[in-house]
Length: 94
Image (cartoon, rainbow, N blue to C red; front, top):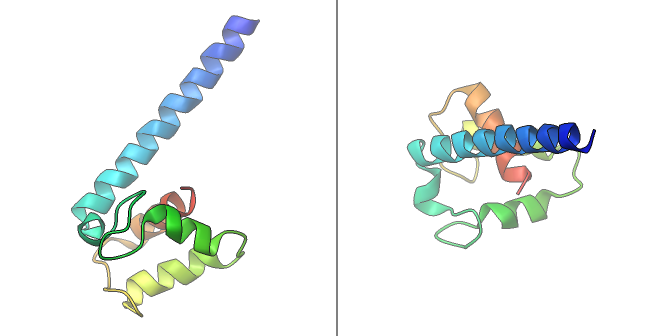
C-alpha cells in the first residue's frame, strides 16, 4: 500500500513540474523573463514578490490578467487569453 501511495505522489509531482516548466517556457517566449525572474528582482519584481503582494486577494488573478492584457501599468502581452490565465496562475503559485 505504501508503494502505491509513493507512486501516486511521485506521479503528481512529475505532472506538476511539467506544467511549471511549460509555464516558464511560455513566460520566456512571451518576453516576461526579459524583465522578471522567478526569485530575483530584475527590471520588474520577481514572480515570488508578485505572488506575495497578491496573496490572499480573491480577485488577484482577474486583476493581473486584466493588467497584462490591457497593458495597464505593465506592457501588454501578446499571449493568448488562456495562456495569460495560465501564466498568472503559475506566478501566483510561487
